[in-house]
Image (cartoon, rainbow, N blue to C red; front, side, top):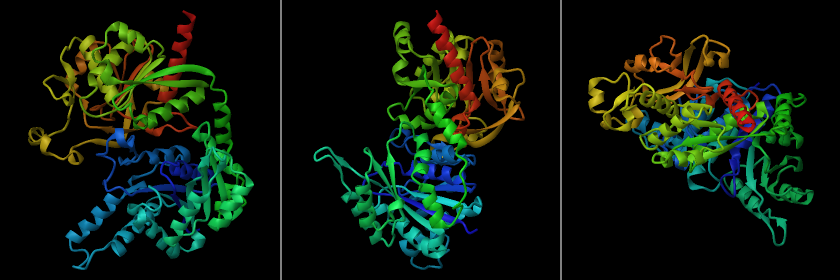
Length: 549
């Protein structure tokens, strides 16, 4: 079978959930036995998300191969359970950079380099490349932004050209739009959708399926009107209402025949009964999330909660598994630095567990140390990830091992560097400020981990080896391993050669684990990550014991 291409675009306004729509459709196609790879094209000029602020853009989702990608890539992975690559997140900046680099190298033999055909051809090449790298039945391509945006135009033209190259029997266009509701006169308005489709037609693209985002149910009259004026089959007008959880969307789409319409158009898996048992079980479990607990998330980007989206989702996945209705208490680490004990008691009064996620830079570090100390001293279940793990070790170094000036060399002051920028040459150390961030050494992507037997970590993983994704520059300084071992810290996870510390735990505490990696990126709704599952279980036990006191 030829690879089939599904193109997902958006209209009227941004933020309609194109990514979730693409991800949910991917899940439905996988349930029919098809292999699926999902790809996103973002029209911004940034080369990638590496230098984009999490406060403005949300988290950087890390793939197995170490790409720093848009958070939508996380949605794709969670819904389809497919590990994606750097080719799954392409920006205009990447495209232009590649074309310009070729021009500088003389690739075009002195010819005039233009948007058409050179930029368009480069976009098309990336769409075909993702299928070559991961041979697959279906490639789902989401184009970021809104139809009509100037910067999106080259991508739409690329889609049009691909549709003719592969044949309309091998590609399909899905357009996600908004149906606004006016309280007075109390009706859904279809005109914005009509105009959006007209704009698509002006680019030479006819949508095959319309996904209509609405806060109110769409009646048959509205559905027929949209189908008639947008030249779309009635059965291809799909409703996308706000759901209690995004994980209800695959079943909601399936009920409407969304995937069947796609398969019919592409002549694939038309008569295959989908196996949606895992999604049905998941949604049944969601209904029984009755045990209320609260997780304090102490981070430095909490004003943009999507900066910790994968952590939030991993908590949800584990909570579903254990039937717990987990509420997150958002705490800005900056605000903890000068708090008294009494004030901290108030802030953490309702917390059944404390999570400190990752981040970069010295801001908020001292507040993270305060939170880690509070968790340790008050025996509250604790999980530190990335920078959160580093600061928890620094806290133990200061307050248990007696290394009073313990810190990370990222703190930008003289200290006993418990975490340091490893493997730097003397020349690089002296000129680090002059090295662009994108060229500075960094541990990115999947790395193996050896787990010490008879540790809490080994009990959680139920094995002595694992692989987790990394996103950090600092490593544990082995010069301090002896004093911290004496202080009771256990180095339960290391690199296979034992040179790098991957995870720590503090056995004197009911549940105190730190990981330099980011297990949240590998959590799935139907398969919660064991670290988060254990963390939520510990939080539930803490809550139970607290109530019984």
